[in-house]
Image (tube, rainbow, N blue to C red; front, side, top):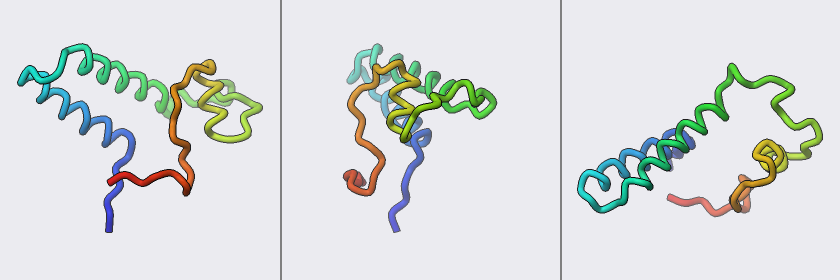
Length: 89
């Protein structure tokens, strides 16, 4: 049975990997610091105490549209979370 990681677990694993690469000099510091900013943004975005009805777009037909509207329309291309998405190990 394949164990699936949550987004938080995957982000933490990538940050730990990046810390090691930063220590060995194999990675420029800006990549590590950008990952740290991403972690903080994710904490703010997924903070359950912050979830209020006025924070969510009212006319969103699906989760992708809601994310796009919440980000002001400036999201990078993301693979939608559908059964047709490719499962990576």
